Amino acid sequence: MDDDRITHDPPPRPSPARRIVALAVPAVIGAGVALGVVGATVGFGGGDTTIIRESAGTMVASAPNASVAAAEAEGQAKSGGSAPALSVAELVKRESPAVVLVAVSDGDDGGGFGSGFVIDRKGHILTNAHVVDGGDAITVTFSDGTREKARVLGVDNSTDLAVLKVDEVPAGVRPVALGDSAGLVVGQEVVAIGNPYGYERTATTGIVSALERRIESPSGFAIQNVIQTDAAINQGNSGGPLFDIAGRVIGMNTQIASQTGGNVGIGFAVPIDTLEPIAESIINEGTPRHAWIGITGRELTPALAETLGLEGTRGVLVTETVEDGPARKAGIVAAQDPNADVPRGADLIVAVNGRPVTDMADVSRAVAGRRVGDRITVTVRRDGRERTVALTLQDRPAGVERP
Image 1 (tube, one colour):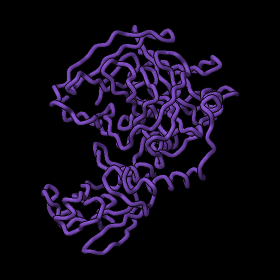
Image 2: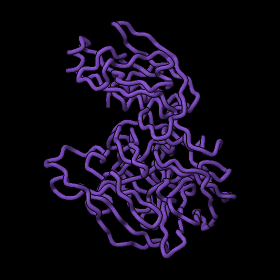
Image 3: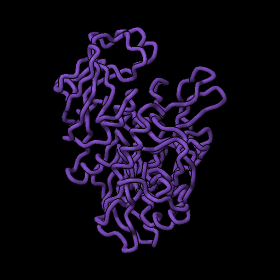
């Protein structure tokens, strides 16, 4: 893997990155299961930083704008308004029974484990795809000690999601409530619950440290709009929930950045708005589906806006539209030359579903939280005038990474 495949957003590097090399970390034992650690490192001047995601038996390496107010309002509207805050003790007591230990056997000497969470009384459990990858047998352990064999209903490697199914959920388990990640703000309190190093249902607290991070999925796809948190996340937390202080799941803990292989306060969770519609399609249709608009875009920076005579305007210039994709079918116009330094002739997207957008992360977030077949509106500026077009989101074609 070359350096340009690292897709997270580290601070500015004091020196050029070295080529990634493998890093072996001694195995640890937890819950009677051996968990190996293998990472990849990239130099950040002061040392090697490892981007880690826990998998079954091994560890594999990967590498606020104008729309915040509208996003927060939409998130509250979707959830029926703001919910009362809980104390950490209240939250953990209420939600931890729905957090499970996912143990995976690979049929040989090893195996591994991670975390997961129950989303309904039918026995559906969400976890990371890399937790169950390569496993021959999967066992889920609940807080009362009940163990159930689980089967994999489906996986989506592009978002590192797996949906498991058990036949029975213990009577005392209350499925988690899925919240909304669209309205998150930096500084918001969060709680992570999982099974680090096999210490079951460990709770840690922190804040949303940053938003709109990018990490690399097991399949090499970039996962957009990832939540960064300083809540302690370690090996074994993968697949576990990240809660807001009202006890709603806002993300799935997936990776950490570390120079030691352990938590240093930089953890990443895939937003629940991205995962929920994909999980729903796996449960209902047996396959992951991804809402897709079919464009490539470029942020309208102040310098570019001045060149194009659009001073004071924010938005996303459409550099390309995909043939037979939703955007082109709706009449959205792409730049004359997608590779030009100044993409002329392009529609400027200024809002999606009435929410202002300033970069492609905003567009991606607006689309990723929708379902295939949903209708959305896109407001564009063309020839000095704004117009709004409606389009129907399609299923993203295989191998396509753009929104």
